[in-house]
Image (cartoon, rainbow, N blue to C red; front, top):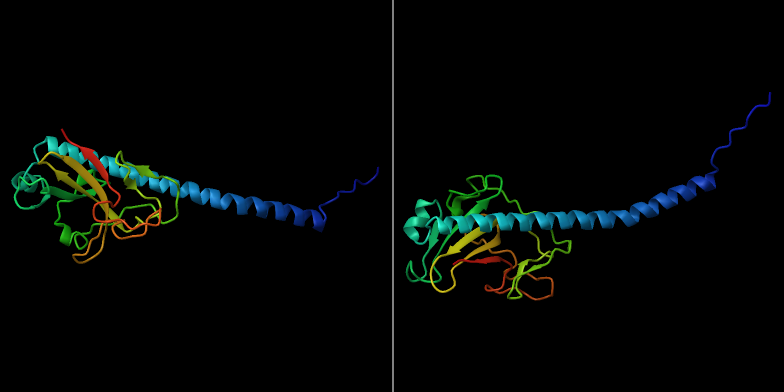
Length: 202
């Protein structure tokens, strides 16, 4: 009976296999990273929609002035008078509770509020625009140290709920994400054009 000779891979063949695997990994990592970022950005937009829905719910439940806002656990910004079109109720949205924070925004970090934005500066391609051609969400901005502020504007001709990301940091400087930052098109947002979701109220 003849002994069967088992032939293994040569060194050249192993190097070719390793090279092929290396090329496949090098190609797949950027694709995987981009898909992961797209998932983060989609999650941020989903959170914005949930926050906007809660803002609408509070408006239709009667949050229309300082008294009703404070009773609902929100804060109130007055511009001239409670009936001014710029006066609004506002609060920080807490996604894992599906509720607004009952803490004053100035003390929210010390009260344990954590940032929950997921999108990084890596562009995953989720570029959501409003009907007025302003952005709801800019995928080239960093949201990882941010929370959502929901504002209800119950008065005037432009009743609306606005949802925008705010940097979570100590002190009174809590800028909206995109306000003064370089955006996707190389411009800087002004106070009126930072990315935000706007829901019209009837």
